Length: 454
Image (cartoon, rainbow, N blue to C red; front, side, top):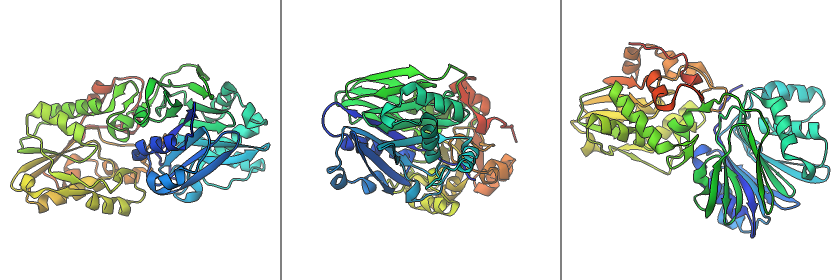
């Protein structure tokens, strides 16, 4: 089964007023983390669920939001995880148990999900979706066996700890009277808490709180949890501290540039990666062109070190979503052609350096090189501000099989360069990446076996 997801969660409780517009806006700020489906669950003692396939403002327009009541709410934007891409698997997931409704939203990947699901099915459990999120909910219910309003913060955390360690997850529950949120002990995925004028909230990134009036923003540490009630909140630890494995792809690609993730600003980190890439991979060229949008910060860093002028040689069509997280190779290829448009006067007759954040499948890079050639580029050099992706990810990044990795298909740089139809291709080295982030506390698994192929 394919493992590929990168989602966003948002939740919280209003001190006054209804929460649905706050959740809607929070999800809109997290739209980059998932574009297949969106949903929210809101209420007080009772909850109503609203979700579907599509972008936030399509699934949850203002006309729908204005009629949703309640101070408690959680929401989710999804890119398919363990479960196919359909409305049934959209989140949040909600059930009625002991005459109370409980809802869950989940960002990450539970490594033991397939085995756990089989075990529960053999014990008589019935599942209506193929999502691991439903399995997490039903396992918690099965262990606690009491009304959700009586669930305690640390006992839910203990169920997660006993059954889902080794995975990468941030999870938020809405139960009558409170919201409970958890970050996995290894800290693969980020989770933030915000005390605001409007109430108390949690989200996958701190940029999701931009529409609020924040008083205090706290990054929830790995192995910590937070309980939010109508008038207060409590942050505590449910798992012992252990060595962290923060996902570097949050900084390389997924998170918003204005977010501060794992204690560092995303934009400034990408600039540093670009500088390091230029330092390691010099090239004689006339212009540096970023692959928009995620390559922009790295291109700025590349320019800072190389002194080659920066130009916007590619126009980004913002009506097209993120092609890396679009399911299906054919869809990703078509997405690139609609998403990036060359500006011919910037390109024609020039030696071009195209700077991008990562090179995973090669879909984007090959298509853009062809655009450059067609627009009259004299030379096209690719510079990637991260190392070669050489292994799959079991913790939530869309790298389902080694066969899809361009680094697996083209082991040697010369062969890769020929395939992409560029004049040269060069990556940031694995050592260079660790110089920027540090040697410990990060998950480098997808780069771990990187070799220096010439």
